[in-house]
Amino acid sequence: MPRFWRVILISLVIVLLLYGIYFALGRPVIPLPTIPYKVSPGQPLHAIVTSDGADQLKLTLNTSGVVEITSSDQSVVALNYTPDTFENTLDLGERLLIAQRIVQGDGDIPESSSFSRKLINWVIAYYYHVIRFQLSVLVTALP
Amino acid sequence: MNKTPTFIKLLLAVILVLGIVMMQRPPMATAEIIKQEDPTNLVHIDITYDPGTKTYSMGGFSAEELRQVGAPQFQDQIWQVLSMLDNATLKIQNDAIDVYTDDQQLISLAWDEPSREILYSLLDAYIELGELDIERAEAWLDKADIEITLSKSKELSKPLRIELATLVQVQVKKNGELSVEGFPTGMSLTPETLQLLDAANIGNLKLCWNKGVIDLAVNGQALPQATLYQGGLSVIDKAFGLNLGDLSPIFGSSFGAGLVIGDADPVTGECMP
Image 1 (cartoon, rainbow over the protein chains, first blue to last red):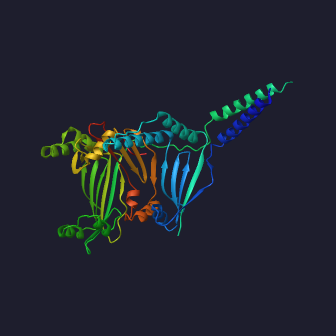
Image 2: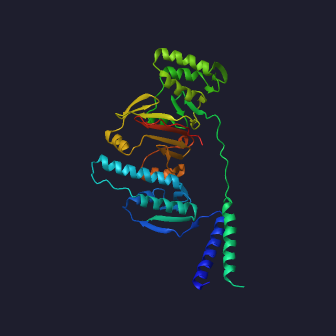
Image 3: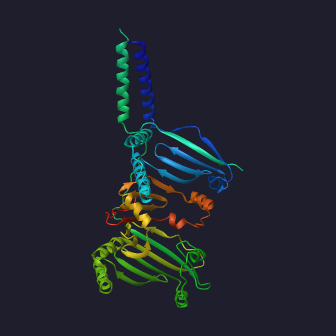
């Protein structure tokens, strides 16, 4: 067998083996490093971040279906989604956007791209079912 | 022996093993959701009153908080009656209405279906109820668990407890008029909002609140479930200066509404988990 195919096969076996272990462990969420974001006084977010005295607000996206906002370890609001409910939200948002243009008499009504919709839904479903990450943004208020 | 078949054998073996592993259910805990067989409309209201200061607290809200939201003040005659009582309780449970005063049973009335039918016919003699309204009244009263407790005390009343299985039916007519359970509210949607809903093809909406958990469905399609935390809500309250006050009674309650626009299909089902 040519060396190229051997490398491909070995890589495939390793990937499958690693994913098998990941799947057997119950597909735990893989945390990614937190992204810091600073807001200066005067910005609209500043008032919200400083409202509880902690001067910090954390937005966490867990691709297993949870979006959560926490303030000094206290959960403020959480959204639980599935690929289906996410698709329904996209559908509703698109319909409301088009309806708003119609009501405002704007002749330029955006065309809906079924390809981009399918791509978004596929990406959401992939990171929901296959491999799960946790992405956090820590918003800190500057004094 | 050639190495090529070994690789293929190894690959097949790994695929086979992984296939078996993936066919198994992921190791996660699954909680059995126990569905209530008979959904009940539960309303428990506790009222404490002080005839000395002529103030009352209701459902966990203080006299001051009630005054702020425009709660009515009792007349002197009512205060005279209340000052003679230590406590009074009205209970509508199962097939009976019971009234207690000073821990003694005062009245007990039958509240089964035939009794309610008599009540409906009496009401029908004075008010045009119609078949649908009786149906709605039965939906509310058939499985009712209502308890109103009055007690002479200076203490704050117990938090309001509302767990409604029946959806409050809200109807928006084609001209925008809003009615709740068939009763006109005098409020209406703006023509722009109606146009927007019509253009977006939104016919009905189901909203359920269950102790901070919000479930919303538009045209029968469920949207992501939102959870509001009482402690966290104070952050929003402070940030936007909303002055929401004590929301414990709301966060201890469950209720839902079905909004129907124009001739769209009615919202069915319940809100109980």
